[in-house]
Length: 372
Image (cartoon, rainbow, N blue to C red; front, side):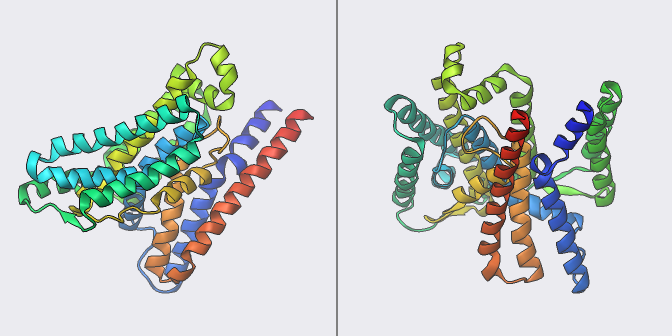
């Protein structure tokens, strides 16, 4: 009886709804493409493009999920990313790409420390603090760029930046290795779920073919997500992060440094935004004062689609990445299939609201069943 209940929970709409939504959307767009005589929508090239487009939001979304789990909020991520890109573009011609990238990420981390200290020790609400930081940092970007676009003009530096961001990484054999590892884990632990994941990954790799490769940011996103997921899932630090978000006072009474964990979440969020900004600057080799404006809402929407609670104590970085893929699959579908970009924002907003409604209703039903 308990096993049946567990399987229902694992594959239920609340736990797996974002996966179902992504699969249904891909199938729907593929069917529309086929009916209109367009190239295969599910080609390895197009799927790789979707992952590439979602990579920067995904990186910031993973860190945002940790932030939301602790019960805090960060509206400044897009502005911090733009500032990091501006620092990179401004310094790279003079000191080289590696040092400029380090300076950009360090600058972003500094903003995260300021946000965390103000929220935790001054006691101002995180929403207000990061809203102010959003405006202030965007103003700083305007100051650094002097209100105009900046670009890297040294060819050797630009080549380094493009190599860091645009290098294609072959994934066929790594995906097969991951699939084999999951199948072995399923056999040893006698758990069918990892085995099912291994079969899906192997099928995707075989479908994509030996030439399947993705841009470097997709690999950076996968590695970052895997590391954060492992920390949250298997370490004491991860359990304490959830405890801080679930009940900060109880966590404090049990000996957990609530301030340290919440400030750490701000630092992680800003560091991830800084790295995303470096990738953005490398991608274009240039920056304009309005770059990434409004991207913070997409980052938060990806976390909400992944089921992360805005009240803290619950969230999954893997599902946040799937939420980002879902949003950019919508964008890609509108562009490739020419479905009318005017309705894109409307439909994306409806999708986010519908997802939040599903998670809210599912949570209330779960609470009623637990009480019963």
